[in-house]
Length: 467
Image (cartoon, rainbow, N blue to C red):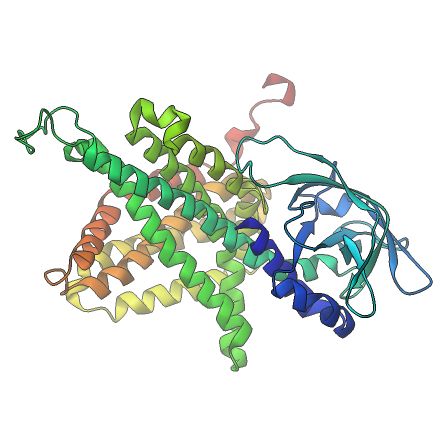
């Protein structure tokens, strides 16, 4: 759920950056689930551009800070599910430099904690209102007011963004999995409905001859939607696990070189995991709704709720457009293509050492990687002379990257399944879905690549008043 995910993320930042005293005071109850955590980043006028936040932190004589300001869109900012809520708040010290380099991170408890660990008086941090949203209506999305609330510095002054990003990589992967999970729920509903719903006959003749019509799963378009859902969900599950493996390696490996490589892959792949999983999550839930026909639009069947609920995953924890800018601007161009080369070299090694029997999967994977290599080189070259090319290319580039990464995942799964398909329907299903992915979904990269190479010129043909 959202609240436990945010609490776990807050614990990561506290554990990595806070003082030993703060860790001892707050982490045991947070990890036990007795206290919850929240992330307070966004201000009324500062969303993506956190450098212009107005929340203030004024030093107090006892070493704590008085936090003043307003935060919006705070998930789990107020509730009575736990005894205490521990807010991680971005704010600026009086002498902080301008921009993002002047942001510090503070721990602000809902209730103060006494020396013996018991809860004391209420801290002046309150919920001003709860947002009325399109979806995720069980989640309290709050406007939070900090009125000289007592807070404690986490990490170094003016290094708050770095401390917050300790949790952000995990949170962004978690949101990607939220999009994936919503799509999976939609698929499970849709497959059951498609097997039961009787409408028309198969184009090749009756399949259920004892019934008035065939189940709609016999129809090619229904199968197209179901297989698109299954290919996206299974591919996303593999890819999210791959990224999680890099996070674990970066954190726990005892080998410095292995740890550094994993950290670079985490930096490269986190925006892809967040954005691509959630983009496909929306596509998948819409397919699931469509399979239900008119019933999918009716609330009692549940499919329309999934469409509403998944939509937020493309927006919070950094919009998908911002994720794409992060991928292209910071991780591709910013590293001179070095991060990308690590991932591409791993795929090349896999295809180079593959048996010929895997050729139906490794050959199109190689072709997709060649295309992504060329596209990456194009972006690196064009962005050197025109900064607009980064923003113009970023969304479609991320999509091409995502489909290529999924192709790698599907080739790995196909390798594991080949030769076992006669023994178990699970492996037969994997192989069939892999073949569908390479035949029907991977070719999307060609139109997306053409859009990238169209450049930025057409985006600036209109003056602002001409829109």
